[in-house]
Length: 75
Image 1 (tube, rainbow, N blue to C red):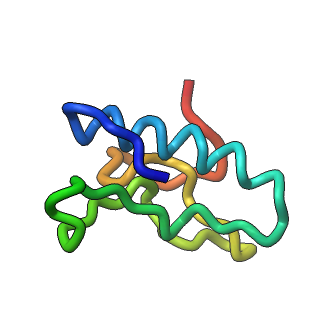
Image 2: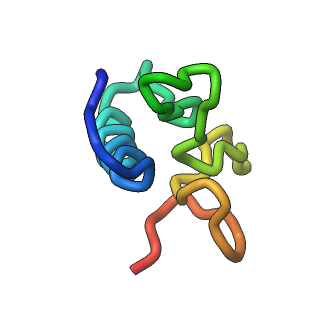
């Protein structure tokens, strides 16, 4: 999906929202989701932390988050 935006942070936010919604499908794994600029597709930015937690699930927090990984969003 090629969203357009002036900032990578907005594209990453959209990707996080889509990634969390697709987890309702058991075959989907948003942990590998990345975003890149149209002219620099070789330069990818991770959307999620991607660290595996006990039980096989992945951390749902953004890449580079502070503190411990979590299976749930912090409020």
